[in-house]
Image 1: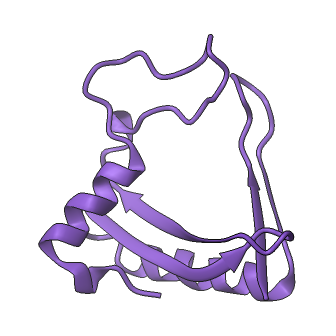
Image 2: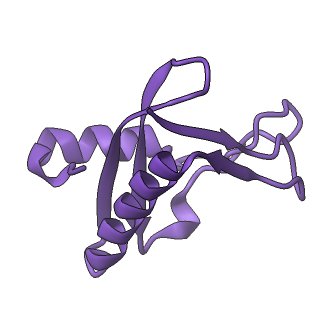
Length: 108
């Protein structure tokens, strides 16, 4: 089983963590490598299929390489630190747009 746990800082200057077993981290590396190889595009997306948390709950990770980093919404979860800028792009909106245009671009 490919295990990946993603921990993001709840607010400014807090550390983030990626923790996983070898299989999970290798799947994540493959997805990152694919996004980097295709990073000449305005947006490149790859996807790891079938990773899980250690309790067995499965999910997918989308790796997005973009040239427009100023438009990306901040990932903080603390109420005082959440994104307040108008017009920012959240990753799930980018994935949905690309999937609707070219579903074959989402690769494992």
